[in-house]
Image (cartoon, rainbow, N blue to C red; front, side):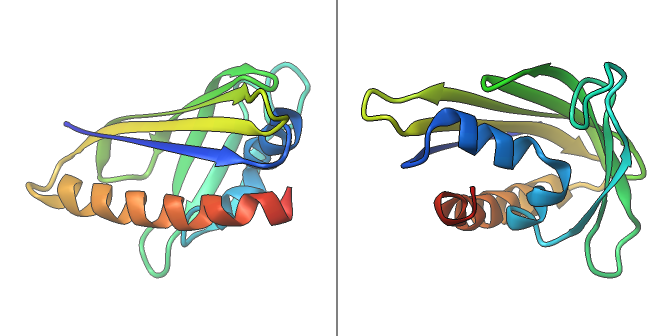
Length: 141
């Protein structure tokens, strides 16, 4: 099982960081993927519990992620629900306000792969791509 955790501070307030990163289509900032909305949340919100996004990375088969827990301006939890060689995948973005008016994100992902060694390769790529993408959020949010 691979587990990664990335911590990042933003200059924008938690409401702006959360609004940007909870919007499915904006996740293409963090991942080298085309991200499209499949379904809005079961509670009638765009990105709430039950909302689904499809990610297409280059020529690889697409896969879907579903939000499983959402607390506005605090938390987004999701898991891969369709089409991936990764198993037991869970992602968690935890947002908090900083005393200086900025915000903090702790992004945790855990998963395993059906192909031996693939999980380590994916973990390395995720760490690199997410860190690079998070650096852009202050300017985009």
